[in-house]
Image (cartoon, rainbow, N blue to C red):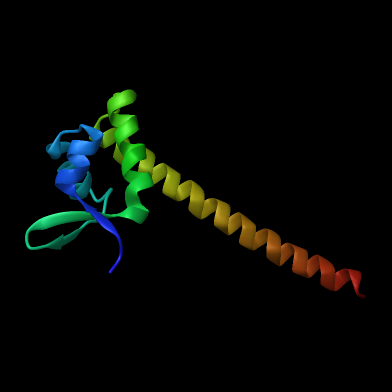
Length: 100
């Protein structure tokens, strides 16, 4: 089983409102595991949770703003990957022509 932390522990540690955590989950920004009606966040997802928490509490970005930012960052990562793929293809084609 993956290491995880309960929603209640996160609320205590990060001093956040439980409704904020639930809104992140309901908005599809966080994925949780549920066991015996207890919600858990995987440790590997903690950096994402911390980023949203910092943006919300430190920068006062509301939930719709977090959704927009998350969506834009995801699209940017997709575009970066597509760009890398295209550059690799271009490099392979270029290498073929150098051999001629």
